[in-house]
Length: 363
Image 1: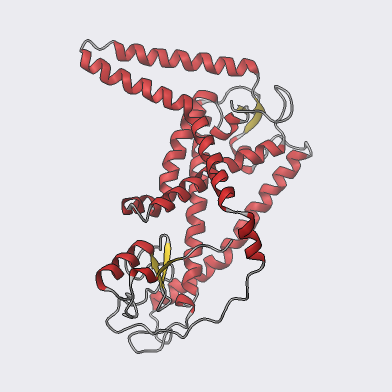
Image 2: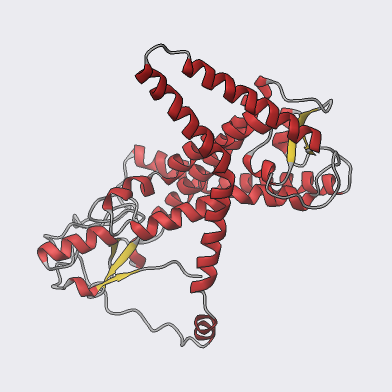
């Protein structure tokens, strides 16, 4: 347990504790993605991890939550706040309930993140490419001659674009309703998923913590004894040392991850200086855009999906701008292309690598 906020042992946790536990792992995900984004331009091998950030973090979350549910009967964040999960009668969770909890803790955020990315991708398709009017590079008029399959796809996208925000609003409204009724003491469930699983959150007592510690030590001793039962010395060491390393990692996991989150927040605060905030308040109006540079016939061409990089045809990672033309790409794709061919990939306008400008999201 890292710390406990409010209340006494055996009492219901406060709503503020529950809200804090919900935001802990998303904060860790932001820290991991931010760190990978910083190192990715210098180490292109990290690009695969960045492109699969949702899957990568889902695997990490699965390992963390599985360890925490097995050792403490609660999620990783709940353990840090001294909480435990109980069934309706206040007893310990069954193995089936633990598996169901693991599924909701890992699968639900992953599915929601993928749906958000999918929805944003479809919204990006509706925007004109690079802020320009849609142009049919083959010479025809855009949108005048579409196939039946394209019409069906567009109708499906229109339906998703209309329904998804409503479903998200319903989800958030239902979540707020559960939190409000929990705050008023009308229910024991702070979220719809906990109600569905018939699982309650309670504050762990000192007896619970000692019991969990005793069971954890007994299980680890059993695993070590099984490893030492090998007659072959080499097999014994190969089995025993990985167990000891995994046990040490699990013991220090929560403190290491918390240090990562706090370190990320500290760096974020450090680079957001008072001078930058003052400059942001005194910023001049945005100047008008430069004249449009048309795509060259022998260029790489504009992708139909505006969220894709024109060079690699994949979602842009660490976006960068070609200053002479105004088109955006992945930083690595644009830098390597300009370094090799000395021109903008789309417009073929001559340029050098010092004209590659990184793009940052608006604050």
